[in-house]
Amino acid sequence: MADGVPAGGKGALFIGGAWRPPASARYTTVRDPSTGRPIGEAPVATAAEARAAVDAAADAEEAWGNVPGHERARILRAVAARLAADRETMARLIATEVGKPIVDARVEADRAAGVFLLAAEEIRQLGGESYPADAYERPAGNEHRFLFSVREPVGVVVAIGPFNFPLNLLCHKVAPALAAGNPVVAKPTSAAPFTALRLAEHLAAAGVLPGALNVVIGPGGAVGDALVEHPRTRLVTFTGSTEVGKAIAGKAGRQAKRVILEMGGLDPFVVLDDAPLDATVQAAARGVFGYAGQVCTASKRFLVQDGIADRFARALAERATALRVGPALEETTEVGPLIDAPAVERMERLVDDARARSAKVLAGGRRPADRPEGTFYAPTVLDEVPEAARVLHEEPFGPIAPVVRFRDVAEAVRIANGTPYGLQAAVYTRDLAHGFALARRLRAGGVHLNDPTNLRWDALPFGGVKESGLGREGLRSAMQEMTEVKLISVNYAG
Image 1 (cartoon, one colour):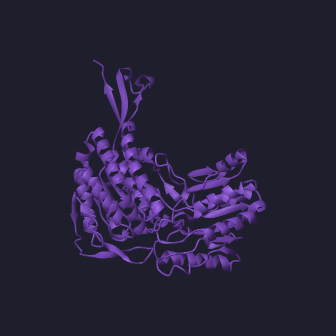
Image 2 (cartoon, one colour):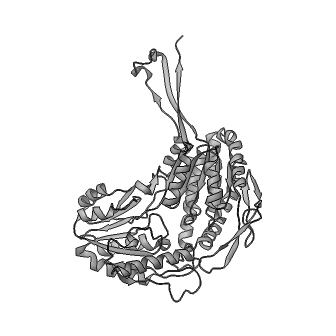
Image 3 (tube, rainbow, N blue to C red):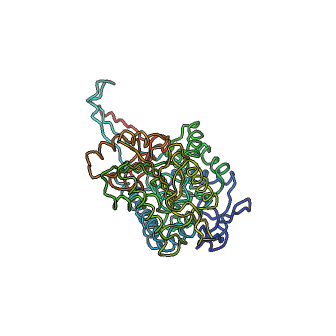
C-alpha cells in the first residue's frame, strides 16, 4: 500500500489532502483475528487533530459544493473504477483486518464500488420541486409569483464507521455525502482502520478536492466527541452500538445537528408451522452464521411455532455442525473468527447464562478445539431458550442461534416486538396472506417474507425503528438527509 497503510508498517492520518503521522506519535497494533498476528500500526489522533480535520473540511466546503454535479459524478465513477480494479487487494485487506471470509470480503468490495456508481447516478435526481403559487390565497399577489425549492449541501458530514463492514458501510456514508456536495471527516473504527485509509487513497487519486475527504483514527471519547461537538460539523452519520449512538444523538442534539443512526438489533426470524423446512433452515443458517453473526441485521432470535420447532432446531444444529470454521483467507472457510477476544468471552457468558436457565445446547457452545490461534467460536444452536435468557435481550453479535417456541401468531408478535430494538425481521411461511398480515404487525424498519433478516439493497432506504436507528441510509435517502431544502420565490410582476 502507499501513503496510508504501508504493509506491516505504520499508517497515517489524512487531513486536508495530506498524509500526516499522528502528533502524539502514538500507534496501536492491529491484529489479524484469524491468527492473532500483527498487521500493522494504526495512528492514534488527538482531539486537536480531529478538530483540524473538521477545519480542513469546512475550508473545502464552498469549493466542493460548487463543483458541478456532472463533475462530482465523474469523480465518483472514477472512484468506483479504482475500487473495482483493486478488488482483490481490498478483499484480502478486509479479510485480514476483520476476519471476514475471503469469499464474503470480495462481495463487500464489489458492493462498495457499486455504491459509488449509485451515488453518481443519484446526483441527477437530487432536485427540488416547483409549486403553483396562485393556488394559495395568501400572501397577496401570488398570481405573479413563481415558487420552487432546491436542495443544497448540509455542510461538513462526520462519518463514523463500524468494524464489520469496514469498506461498504463507510462508503454508504462517504459516497452520498460527497455526491450531495458535502465535505466529509471519516472516523473508521480503531479495530479496522486500514481499509478506510486505502479508500482515502483511491478518493484522492480520483480527484476529490483536498479537504473534501479527511480520515482520522482514534478513541470515541476524544476523537469522536471532538468531531461531533465541533461547531462546524452539521451532520453525523453513525453505524454501531445503540449505547454509543444515543450518546452521539445527545451531543449532536445540543447543537441542533442532524444525525443518521444505524444501531443495534435483535432481529427476529419467525417460522410458522407451514414453513418449508429445508429452505427455511438454509436461510436461517445464512442469517445467523454469516460473518460469524457479526452483522447488525443478522438473525438473532428464532421464534418457531410449536408444530415445527423440534425438526427446525435439529436441522439447524446439523447445519451448524457441518459449517467449516477457519481462517478468513482460506477459500473454503464458511465461518471465520470474531473480531477480538472480548467478543469470544461475550459468547461464553451468553451461552452459560442460557444453559443455566435450562436452554439446551444442540450445537457448538464452545471455542473450537482445532483452532487454538485466533478468536473463534463454534456456530451454536440453543433450543428451548426461556424468555428471561440474556441472549434474547442483549445483541450477541456472534454465531449464536437461540430457538424460542411459540403457540400462535399473537404470541410470536409479542415476543418479536418485546425488545427496544426494531431493525429487521423475517417471516417464513407458505401462506403469503398470513405472512403479509404478520409483517404488518412487526415493529421493524424492514420485514422480509421467506428471506433472512440480513438482506439489504444499497440503493433503497435502510434503517431501524425504536432504538435501532434514526433516519435512513440507502443512496437516495441518505442524500436527501444530507441536504437542506431551500424555498425560492420570484415575483415577476411588472
